[in-house]
Image (tube, rainbow, N blue to C red; front, side):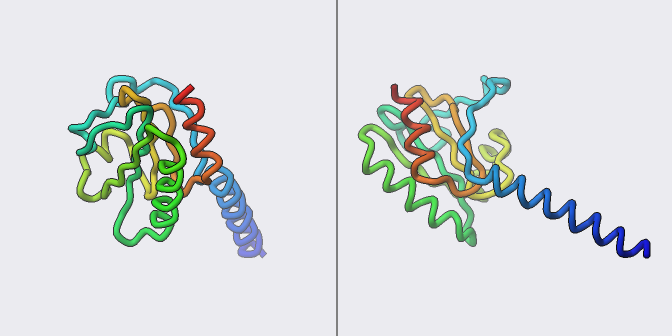
Length: 140
């Protein structure tokens, strides 16, 4: 009978974990400011000039299926909003930056303001509406 209780507890824990992860996946959360020095990225860090108003930095990996969808969403948003740039970085090729920003999974999207300060980030594939809303907070 003990095995049934253990199985039930494991199933309950896995269900709670799945629900929490589903809720948090792709949400663009504001930075709390505790890493202010390391949360500024410049053209030397990402390899291209920053966008005039904002920059969307996407960390991807070679075999990441959600990364393709994220690339498409961010590309559509940059076409819609003037002055916003989209940069996709390979996480494996940029390990120093991945460690500095504490990127633990792909895709991870980081929203930079015009000065390169990290203002929002999301782990997982964000929705287009959430990206547009995050940019609205940065640009205005």
